[in-house]
Length: 419
Image (tube, rainbow, N blue to C red; front, side, top):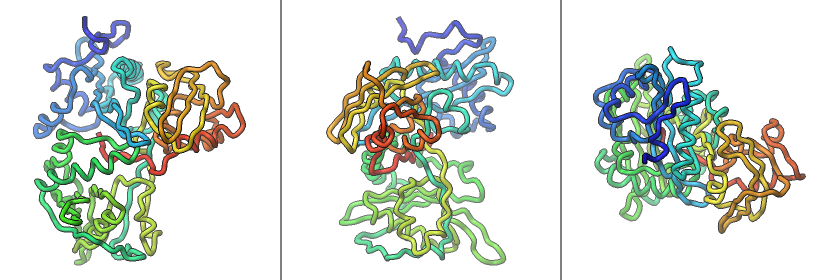
C-alpha cells in the first residue's frame, strides 16, 4: 500500500498528485512560466537535485500540468537552539488560464495534509505575493530589511577594535570554511534554516543570469582570528560611473560572523572597497547592531518587509519543541478555518528548560487564528498589537502581555536562506 502522500486525490475538479520523474521537464516549464521566466539548461541539474518527487505536487487538466508546488525537507532553528523538521514550500504556481478555479486552494489543502501525515509540525515559505498565504493559515514569522548606505557617510562610532584579520578569498575556500560559521549562527537564531552540502553548492553557483543590473561574478572575503576563520563575506560589484566618477555599489551581500565584532570588521571591509559609493543589502535581521555602530545612523536607509512565513500544522508538537524565556502557563484556543489541522484548545506550560503542550478543556486565556499563532511562534510576533488589530482575543486580563513574554526571544527571528 502506498503511503498517503502517494495517493492521488480523486474528488477534485483538477486531480492533484505527486509528479513522476518523467514529468520533471513539464513541471519545470509550467512552474517557470508562472514566475515569468524560461527554464535555463544550466539550472537543470541543480533544480532536479533539490526536487523530492514524492513531495512535488501538480494539478492536472486533461493530463496536462496546470498547477505546481514542491516541498524541500529542511531543518529550522526554533527558540532555544533546537533545529526541527520544517517543510519548505516553494515553486507554487497556477497557470494564468486556470486561475480562480480553486486549484491553489486544493493544492494547499492537499500539501498541508501531507505535511501533517509525515509527522512534521511546520510548513514554511517565502511569499512571492504577501496577499496569498494568510488565508491558508500562514503567518509572517520573521522580518527582513533591505539596506542602502552611502559608503563615505558610514563612519563607525566608536571605532571597532579588530583582533583578527579580513582577507580576500576564493570560492573553494569559502566552500570549505563558511559552513562552520553559518552553522554557528544558524543554531542560535530562530528561523534560520540549516544548509546541507547540496544547498552550499547551490549557494555558490554563479551563472551569468544571476548577475543582473551590471553585477559582477561573486567576490569573497574571510575573517580570521587566532588562525581560524570566524566570519565570511560573499558579494558582487554592481558597476557604474557617473560624470567620470565611480558610482558602483557592493551588493548581493551575505555576511555572517560568529561574533558582533567579527561582523563589524567585515562591514568595515565592505565600506572600504574602492571605486564604490554605496553598499546594498537585500536581507538583514531587524536587530542587526550595524545601525547602532554608525555615527550618523539616519544614513542607513532601512526598508522592512515580511520574511519567512510559518504555518503550524501540529500545535502540541510545535509548541513543545521550542523554549520560552519565562516560566508560565497559557490555555490557547486556536481557530483554523483552512484544513483544520491546528484547530483546538491547548494548554501550554513552558519555560527556559523545556515545554509541554497538550489538548485541554480548560477555559482559554487567549483566542487566535492559526496564522496569528504561527506569527508568534518564532518570537517575532506581538500579541498585544494583535489584540488592537482584532486578530487576538484576550479571555483573561493581561493574557496577551503574558503571551508576548512567553513567546518573545532575545534574538529576532531571521532567515537568510531563500528558497
